[in-house]
Image 1 (cartoon, rainbow, N blue to C red):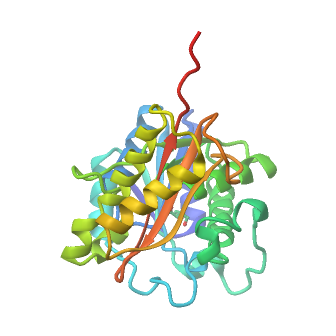
Image 2 (image 1 turned 30 degrees about the vertical axis):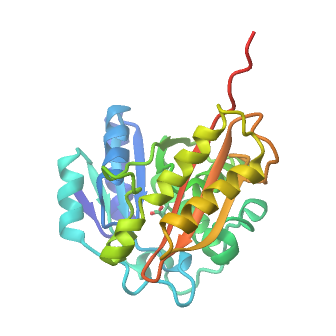
Length: 287
Ligand code: PAF
């Protein structure tokens, strides 16, 4: 496995792989890798690519007062995981290597980033899009792998790929969960024991809403209210930031579950802000 710190050396490794007929599968991450990231690497490898993982805690997607400084950095364990899952190259640049001193260009997918997480994290998705666009241009991958847990990020990047004509196939992999349903996240480690105990209720609330649809509740407001009520009762240490039922592509609120929708939520505990989501399908109409 090649470990690259500079853009030039990473490009040289990928150029050599391409010369031998390989296609590149890019797995962009911020490190502190867990089984969710491993599933992306596995999928890229299973798709037959030369798997290139990037590990970069991107400062431009953290707002003032967010956890950039304390975001967990575990490079030794990360490299071990990459090696164990068959990654062929890892790119771990410094902030200076990625941004130099003079970066003034920002990629912004305006219409998809005002709601959901964008409301409480202004500028976050501009930071994500800009760094992902840079990584796409650095690596020139055939395919790029992202986790469904970050549903808004997936919708935003899908739109960026389409709008800017990146010749890249985006592959969205299912959320990986703890046995009790909590979606894996590097931020789970911030939770206190009491918060950790309540955190699986995010997934339980989404499952509850999904189970109401086949029983005839298709009104989005009622589903959102059921989720909020479940969280208020069973995860009282968390403050609900949003519960929304939206179109999975445009992220606009929907009124009825008459086609597949995304139920998405964010809950702020004292020590960590958690997000989760679930695709909810309407009942197939009989006949
Ligand atoms: O999902 C993440 O870890 C980050 O937002 C990403 C896509 C690696 C960009 O920094």
